[in-house]
Structure formats: structure tokens, C-alpha cells
Amino acid sequence: MKAVCQVCMHHCCLEEGQTGLCRARKNEGGRILCGNYGKVTSLALDPVEKKPLKMFKPGSLVLSVGSYGCNLRCPFCQNHQISMAGQAGNLPETADISPEVLAYKAFQLRDFGNTGLAFTYNEPLVGWEYVRDTARLVKEKGMNNILVTNGSASLEVLEELLPYVDAMNIDLKGFGQEYYRRLGGDLEIVKEFITRAALSCHVELTTLIVPGENDSPEEMEQEAMWIGSVGREIPLHVTRFFPRYHMTDREATDTAKVYELADRARKYLKYVFVGNC
Image 1 (cartoon, helix red, strand yellow):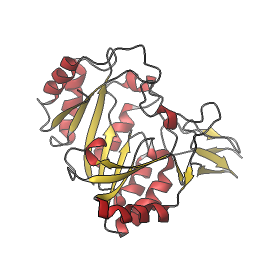
Image 2: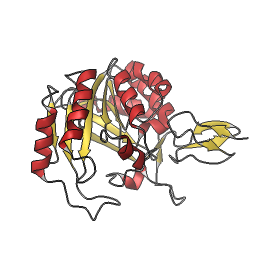
Image 3: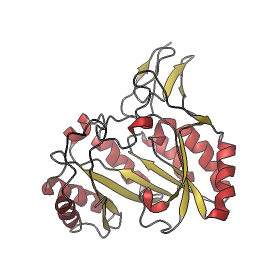
């Protein structure tokens, strides 16, 4: 029996046993299930600034966890080994870690400075059920949850998670619908996601500046103006691109360009940070 996944803009219509574009959700018995539930590819105690978050508990550490799968197709992906895994039918090596075990591990690491759990490395929303179940337990232990996401998910999924999430870094890839289309996404969905998230938790945004793609001063001003309309105090990270994945033939972004675009954004935003320079 066919079933339609409602998690993101792709609305994958899947036959029995078929996996969606994200490679993390599949049709089992006419129901769309989270195939990467509890399948952990990466686990590390990171500085919160690495998420990146500059204005949420600066100087603290957070246990960071990732699985596999993503619903975008960014040719510059920095974690493509896990986020894009499964395209040829091969999934990465994983460890099975239940929400209970992961939440307890986060709690144990308090003595080492851990403040909570960050869902990151791949796109966590393609396995949002695991995020919800684990984040609920982390909150019960009096710790924080961080979500690092592309924001390409339905508001229904977001509402499921907001009661347990304290902070997010959301990738705003650029401010052109055509650019988003080439990445497999939808700018308007991301804007809706950001607008709703900012009402309920701390939000910071990141834009990776890719030469020749989203690096015009006019686009940055449009982006910053829109962010400012949502909240002038929302921090924006303007980040330098380095050749990765399918873009190894490109040059890294000129640092002067990154600083120029950051200055443009400061016309509309109170907090703008430069990254990878």
C-alpha cells in the first residue's frame, strides 16, 4: 500500500518497503516510519560555539549526536559521508542507542561540563521522532536541547519538538527561491519554520557564502532585511565556503567578500558574526 510522507516539502509517495529521498524514512505496512531511529553515526562533546551558537550559553559544552540522512542535496555538504549516505544503497556504520541511554549519557557528562544534547551532523528532522523522544528525557533531567537543522520541515513536525528545544541554529542557505530549488528545497518553507521557531526558543541563523551562488550584496541585504522583520536581535552567522563534496573545483570564498556581506547585514541586524575566516 502506498503512503505519503508529510515531514517535509517533498511529500514522498512511497511503495511498500520503499525509502524516501532523505533515505531515513520508509513505508512499512502502509505507514511512514523513521528508519534511522536510534541509529547513531556520530557522538562528541563539542563547544556550543561549534554548532554554531554564539549567544546561547557561550563557553559551555554540549553532547552532539548525529544519525544519517538529509532531505536537501547541497553540493557543498560538509558532512556528506553521513548526511548523504545510502544514495548507492549503502548506509554508514551505526550504533544503536536508545533515547533512554543517550539522555543518561548526556546526564553523566555533566561532570565534564556538558549542558545538554545537540542534534546535529546530519539533518535531524528526517528522524524527528528520535529527537522528540530523546529531548523529552533530556529536559526531564534539567538539561538543554539544541537543534541544528536546515529548517526544511513541516510546521506540524516543528510543533512536536518546540516544547523540548531550547535553541536552534537554522541554515538559511540564501535568499533566492531558484537557489533553494537547485538544492532541493523551498525558501518559503524555511522562512515559515524560522518565523515560528523564533517565537518559542533561541534561534541563530547561518548562511554559507558560496562564490557565484548566493554572494551578491543585494541578496544579503534582502535576507538581512527579512530576518530583521522577524527579529532584529536574531544572530546571523555569515560563513566562508571551502571546497567540499561536489564543489571541490571551486575556490574558497574570498574573506573580503564575507566581511563585506556581514557589514551589509549589520545595516538591519544587531548581531552578525563571521565564520571560517
